[in-house]
Image 1 (tube, rainbow, N blue to C red):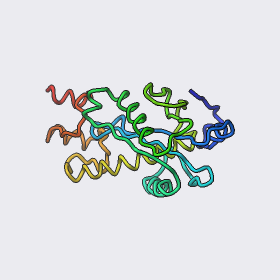
Image 2 (image 1 turned 30 degrees about the vertical axis):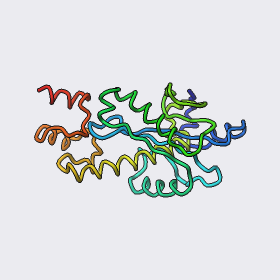
Image 3 (image 1 turned 90 degrees about the vertical axis):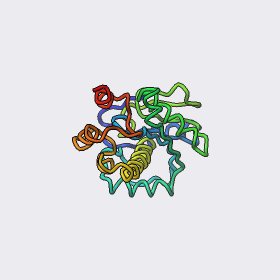
Length: 212
């Protein structure tokens, strides 16, 4: 696990990747996941291998970017990087718990890459046990490491689009706007209309409603 001083924590940079490249690692993947907190939809992870000579400008943690900026960077990353995505379904989340489902999504995203990375940079404080290869966990890596920031953008844009698609099937829950998070609109709709196959039944608000 890697930490940073406050002065290094302003914007994500390519320092860790450059250090790894200098030590012989030619291919570095950044990995992040989104969707731990929602009551509906999958948890989604992305693994991204940036081209050191063609890194899109203004990469940052997806949470601090506007939707318009995320979409623009997503398109730029699609054409300039190697990436893979993985989803873990609500049913699997209920079976595994959200932490293990998030770790599984990250492992699967790395496995889906068409190029095997020499080193993997994971957002968070834990390297998944099932991950194959050399890896380093970086706390708040999406705000510190460019490869992880890129993964956060890919994962966020992909999951948000998926939730918009699901919204067309179940429009009363407002997923196009709330992405499955427990907003007032979402909670009221659950009470009024019940749960869908895309809801996480093990999450306490859903569990409490189901148990009366």
